[in-house]
Length: 280
Length: 360
Ligand SMILES: Nc1ncnc2c1ncn2[C@@H]1O[C@H](COP(=O)(O)OP(=O)(O)OP(=O)(O)O)[C@@H](O)[C@H]1O
Ligand SMILES: [Mg+2]
Image (cartoon, rainbow over all chains, first blue to last red; front, side, top):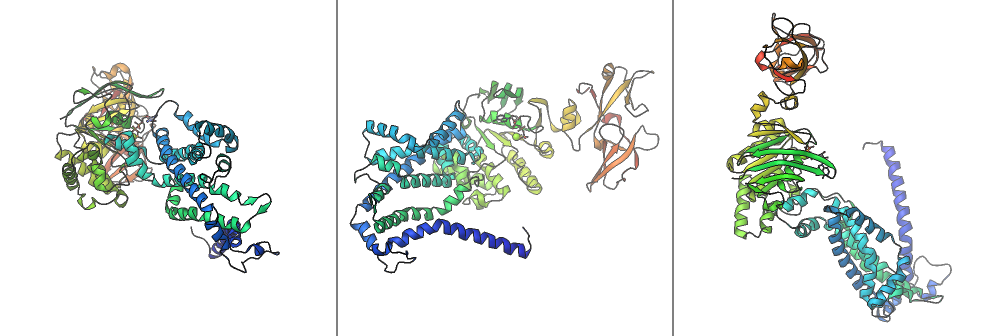
């Protein structure tokens, strides 16, 4: 697009201003978490609050890492989130492929039911789900928690993958069929490799959801062996006493893994979100 | 050597029938081209043969055996898609080897077949590349190569050249002609929009229209003896001029009278079938019209447009009919708009159609 130099200047200023505003809006709380985690507790309560820590201390981190169960909770979270991710991606792909590609009675109905399943609010489900887990003897287990998260992530992943598979030309399936591939071979050797960006995004979503989830984690598990870090964090709030320093340090520790994963998968996320970029 | 036989083949998508009973025999080793307007069912026909769609009713025989419910891979066919449909995550080599690997063929044999096909299509330097890094023409050759490695009895092409630019299209067309030459036993069915492809490649052309076959014949047959108005209009470029006429019965010989032209144009034999109907259509190809000399029986009109194509010029002449008359003349002649022109033709070059459109 050709524009006058002045128009260009003005446009750039507006864009820059908007970006700065958006960045400030989303990063200010994160900054506050990080800064607070590095302060001594007397400084945390100082009035007026300090923008930079006067006495840099890693004491909060030391306590969070070595003198509490927090690391264990993080590990539990990681196991649960990984389980949810893998199972959601596999079931999601296996369920999405037929809906996206095969013609059968009830195809549209199943697609709609899948949407409805993930539109159900968790707060509505958590009591019935608790009963189910109780009957299965899975209350207070990581498996039970994984199962609970799957009720949300599987429909969501399936729905996203239906859309993603839809962007892959159907002729590829047909070519594979003529080449003698079975449906399962077509899925595993042709569609899935092409859909890697989509699968990554969907898996990342499932991971993030399981990682950040709080309600089920609080209700369904309580022992140290299965508790996830979100519920663990809430354990640092005792009545109306907040152990701020440790709380913030723990939060930072919990952000780190997911941050690393996102940075590593960035390339795929961009590709995956730009669905339709797959060309035959 | 595999022949194809279609008997009363119908195809419906839900309540909509798109093929209305197709009967067609394709001999072993024959190159048959399907042509027809968009949406007439050519691709559907091809996909029925490939086994990508199910036949609603009727029978399809491949090599004398009923193939209605054979899976695509067991039909001994290979298909080349308009969009190439190459597997984007595989190298050229793997694209061509995929079907063979699936069938469990031994590695050395796969390698030999892929290399032979690559050699034949000048793809050897590109075997390690991914399709993304190939030009359109190379991609199409890979798609053809993938078909060749399967060593099929029947090749199916669905508009394989329509995504290529004009020069590449000519080159790849010749490539396909060579392919046919190299594999005289393979039966080939080819769908195209392009007249030149149809005329140059086909042993026989099948003209489809609206889910049925209008005519089957060699390219020359379709050009010289179109069975009806549809085929007459469809084959040839620019299309044949079609002019409605009445039969003038008075006098000693019946004659053919074009509306708006006062004098008798063509005299008919007394037993010409067309006389019974009283009306009909006269067809004359643009290349069979020429500028009239004095004394010739002639159609007269004013020039609307002269399309100069270099080697020749297409003149659109308003002769008082609904459609202008198109005349193909050598490129030197280019009358200006509004200029009056008289054109004439030879009796043996005209096609007569009765009012319903069938050739007489
Ligand atoms: N899967 C389908 N479901 C419903 N209708 C279909 C389907 N495939 C094709 N049709 C219809 O069948 C008719 C024939 O389609 P087909 O693709 O065979 O035409 P075609 O002759 O190949 O046209 P083109 O020259 O544009 O490729 C069209 O009216 C089309 O809408
Ligand atoms: Mg088509």
